Length: 432
Length: 180
Image (cartoon, rainbow over all chains, first blue to last red; front, side):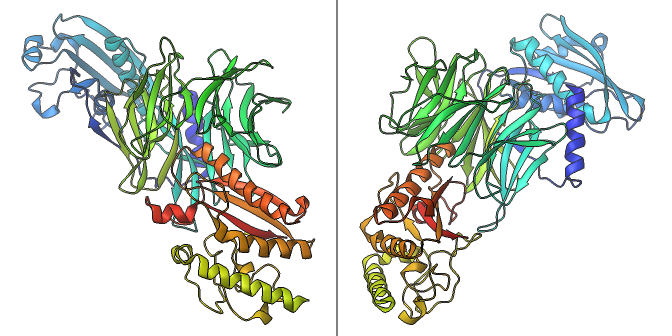
């Protein structure tokens, strides 16, 4: 993970020396009522102005951002212990904390740091976690996210996804001169790196299952083509440039195939599967309507897709063996499109039309196919699951601008990621 | 013969102008003799230009590049979620159909677009459907299949920005682009 992260950074600097990108700022728009109270005490930094930034602050803001924790304000802390032995549990209990995190950041040499931390249950005084590890300077931020991940997992039993990345499209400039950028950043919006830019549209970034490559659509020749770009080197390959549309790439779970949308000469869009090694195509759907936005099931045997074969767009699934008949999944409302499968395949996230607005909804894939509309916007599109399935990132509009937002998969926590630059579109959350 | 065609085009253009003042208003206002250049490889926003001008200028302008005459009109607008060509655009399509059939070496790319609502990839499908509707209309009037190609930009290349119907109406369109 560390290695991957560093090499990715290197690419970012290599391709674009300036890092003047405005960062995303998280605003929590709707919190969870039963958030767990926790205190993340500022870490001790023996050896003076050692750490390039405040590790404990990052851990604290990660936990707060999840909406599942209520983090204690530093100015309310009457003391700041750095080891378990010096915690006065009764005091922290009186301040209504259920948990406390203490730790230290020690300088090994100017480029390496030792992080040690402990997590305690304030009520039982039990030590729940104790870890120590070394990070280099560029890896320190990632290491801090990993601390938050461990605390999150220990308390909630859900793997944390703070130390992950997202990809998205940012559009800059005004018509008719626009610049389209494909950006990869940390999940909290920090460390944005431009991995591709063009004066023609870029769209539909999709992560390979190993998190090393992105497939996307580029109109750089004023025609759509699907490219696969290997992030560690920046090397890219045009994998589909047929006449007509080349759209909506989606990686198979084994990373060897892409599902994508192609068209016939008379403009009929259907879903195909392409073997990445041979570029051999297998046609998956065959219908005069628009069939697009394919997504794979976890076992790689089924493809979910959007089709307007019955009138408006609805979501279907079909086995990839020939002769399999598509099965319609959505029946509520006249517009249900762009399915994304949750990591455990227990639910689908998709875009639905409700009260004239486009919103993010989920559907239970087991049981009775219960639908829950999670958002209340007018232009909420492009949902993408966090790799732990706990949250969904999506694109929305805020005062006429394209921004990214998050909603917990149960709809109870909502956040907006605000950036000061560009129209942000099509977020795609990377795998672990 | 050329003169007759030119006059016919002028009449068609005049009829069009009378038929759909609203649509013209949301784009560039018609200005007689305007020299704004028509759409070319890079041009999306400057493509729908003025009608009118003198008939004499049309003989040599087979791609509408000088911005006058019905051939200078190269954008077909659509209703929300529709790909049917509205009657007011029949004359524009006929003018280009005649132009393409009388100049078999000309090639045209049809660029389909949608407004910003809905999902991006599904919008690619809707844009393609619109481009195909114009392609079929041109072929029905005798244009060879080999002269035409389509591309859909979906909602990725809007002509106007804004989250309202005024902008969306300008974005639901097919741009007819003469290509080398």
